[in-house]
Image (cartoon, rainbow, N blue to C red; front, side):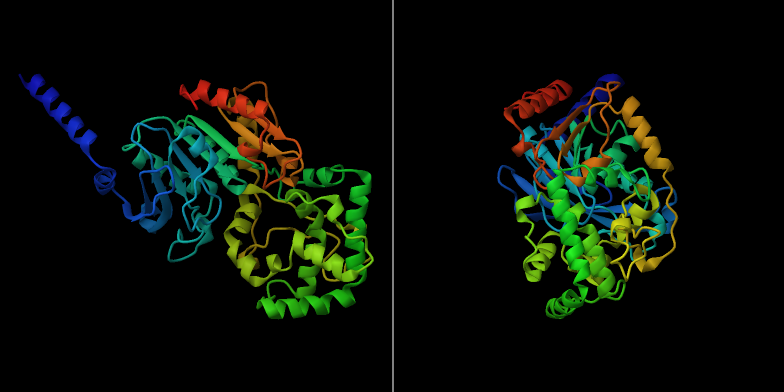
Length: 425
């Protein structure tokens, strides 16, 4: 009799749960506050959430913060895509895998970015271990609402987060789809230099170099123009001087040129200095090295300099023209908050690198063949059930499913159907 009553009670509970609205289910979740927002096209409702997270997941006594998340709902019977942002996410945005799978989506702002910051910004707790534990907590909470297949995805640094999330919590999702995600093995990963020395034609690389030299040689004419630009744009330069920022922009130029898909035809012929400078500003810009932008990306730079690795600038070809930056050691692209002294530890990235080759199953990697970040991509391995797409002619911005060939897209869809046991229209 007791067994019958228990079965009836469980069945009644299940029936109640099935009849609950999403709002009612959100009310039942601990650590979650929410407000309704406009639903994107194709979704029945959407919510902006705040999820309570420990600053230190190993010791909650250190306090909590609230992480911003956007939930877009299609149906309780649909798959769910968790977007692992690498930076801030101030508004809701729907990603390609979500549309492809007609899925629900949780778009998660990264800790220490945007609204997802503790009262005291102690960078001690900005680690990949803590960031992925945030995602795991969200996955556990919303697993109570969405019991179907789960997919994670992210772009660039968000794609890196997707990779590390899967490493620490391999059972949280069924498939991971990182876009244009580097896996840097060093504080200054020299594979970047190898890429920049070989990408494109000899003629194109020569044009790039010559433009850099022209700008450095004409610094006396360029710097006054940049000062007026900075004044008009209300940019301040105290972390770097304006002259340091100028030299950084010139050194950065080939990296950004290939990353963002510029064409060799875009490079000026050198007849007008103003044209050279305008092109530099179009490709790199000087604002990226201002206090405003360095502060905006402070958390990113801290992660790059401590755990995730990054890149520097080969200065030897420009040694005679550099005045503000050192030739050795190479200037580095990570501007650590407050110029604090940090130490890079590559132990984790190397462990992940090895794990992906041996155990990283059900990953779909997307890289642009001309994107500079493809230089430090996750290499193909025949030991795992994963798929790599290296899209010819595509860069950091255009390496997307929508820009695949018909053959590439068919392969991606067939792979997802096999792994998720779903039919994709």
